[in-house]
Image (cartoon, rainbow, N blue to C red; front, top):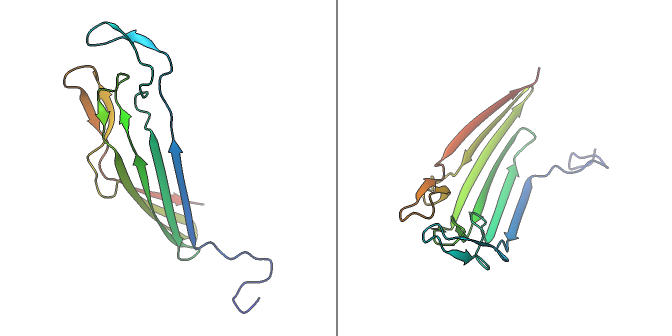
Length: 154
C-alpha cells in the first residue's frame, strides 16, 4: 500500500458525483384536424404544443459519499411550459422540485431514506380532466413523499 492507503491499481473511491440532464422538446402538431370540444367546429392544431409535453425539462443530482457505508444526495427536477389540452387553452405552471436521500450500509443491512418534493411544493399538476370545460378539473401533484427502504441480505 502506498502512503495514501491505496495500493497501485486500485481506484480511489468516488466521494462526489454529479449528474445533470436537459431536454428541449419540439412536441407540436404538424397537421392535425379535430373538432373543437367547445364549439364543435373543425380546427387545425398545427403548431400547437402536444398536451403534457413540456418544452424544457431538466434534472440534476449531487451525491456525496462520506465512506463505504454512508452517503447522501440532493437533486432537482424542472418542468417548463406545457399545456393540459391540445388547443393550448389550459396552461400548466412551470415548476421545480427538490428531492433528497441518505443511505447507510452495514453488514447485511442497507437502509435508504428518500424524500421526494422536499419543500412540499403544491403549485404543480399531474393531470387534468375535462380540459375543454370552463373550469377543468386539475389533479395537484403529490406533496412531500418520504420513503424508507430496508434491504436485508441473508
